[in-house]
Length: 315
Image (cartoon, rainbow, N blue to C red; front, side):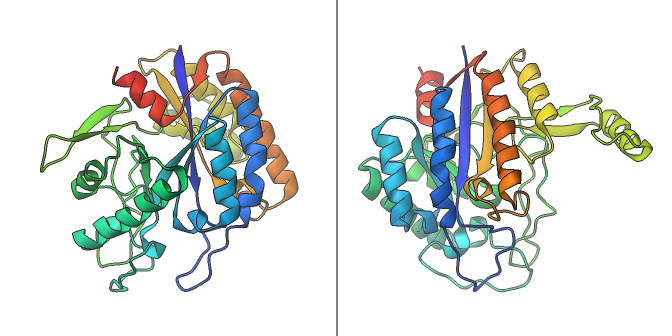
């Protein structure tokens, strides 16, 4: 049976609108139990890829300890470089939040040490799963992951080029994954024989006509244009893409990959925690869409954590 992976970027409230110097709040931790309960209903096991400010919130620590204790999910690492100690001032040449790969190698290493130590302190075990902040990776980054014992990464989004997302220092941009494979593959440390398993986010470029919800000529022309040009779909709800997620589930159950990966941000589970879901009604609609996806996926996939997937893949 194919595997169903759920990865949650677990981070502070509405970081899309956060500005450097502002306090980062973590109230979304109070909204996570509803999502975990829905995962439990379908036997799915979310991987809570967690960053620094969430690990500093005792309410979140209590939540994730319960999840782990009940074997209902996994705590992985998600590193936002700009607020993970040690602090290091970079030149302010651009307005984007800095990527970890913009920092000197020693600072990259120390920030990863901070995150790894925190997770070990909370769980008593070495973390094995990771996703880069703002999706940005390079060979140095993967070298550090292997050095710290991480076994699995899920930062790659095949078919997507993040070069329009700038960092903080001059000419820094996001990673380009346009040509990366959609199936898992090994990435070897350039300084040793160690390696990490890359498990890409489920993204597929499709040429399919999706009937627009608003029956206007402009909307129909837009749907035809996207069908001809092609559009990249992924299992990431935005409040208006249930049909596309279900279509992706349908085509993925027939392809060569042995998994699909659903992703979301923890803050998107809270009203006002993101620019996309600002009201309680929008959150309820989000949960309706998620449950439709989970219900359909449960017919063809079994839920596993990234660690369990690694053990399955490497066996």
